[in-house]
Amino acid sequence: MKKILLLILVVFSNSLLAQDREINWIGFEELDDALKTDVKPVVIYFYTDWCVYCKKMERNAFKDREVISTINKEYYAVKMDAESTENISFEGRTFINNQARTKRNGIHEIPLLLAGRENKSMSFPVVMVLDKEFRVKIKSHEYLTTDQMKTLIKG
Image 1 (cartoon, helix red, strand yellow):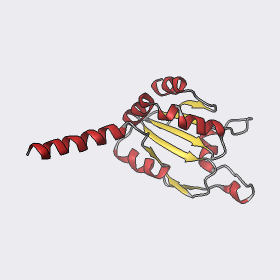
Image 2 (cartoon, one colour):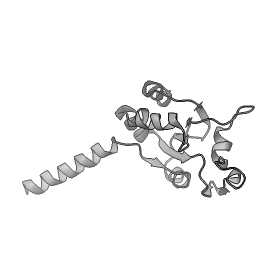
Image 3 (cartoon, one colour):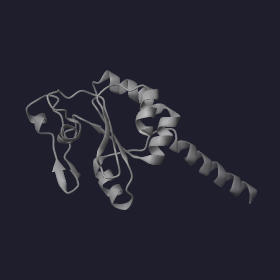
Image 4 (tube, helix red, strand yellow):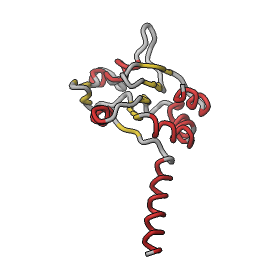
């Protein structure tokens, strides 16, 4: 009996520790489903495969235990390659990458819609924090250090 309890304790504690090892990233379609059952704020991260600063943030800020813990507990975390060519259904609408047909690395409609800036070109990485009503609270179009990320998600 003791061995069974010990085994259950070890498995349970490992699963709890695993929760704080990485961010529980989801896609927009999963977010759509999640918001129907439990409404909470959202962190959105748009990146590209060629973005050096995106890779640096993934190695640093997104690997910090405090950042991981805060995001996993308080937010839905959405991660999206801004150059994705996949069609994405969200809130009853299908979003596509129109530019993929005309440009080698076209930007998908979703980052253009959510992270686009008037009179400025799109730049990456983009980190956005949205409130429970899906209104933009913070939008960053630059590399964020671990400390800057902590401030952004706690603000």
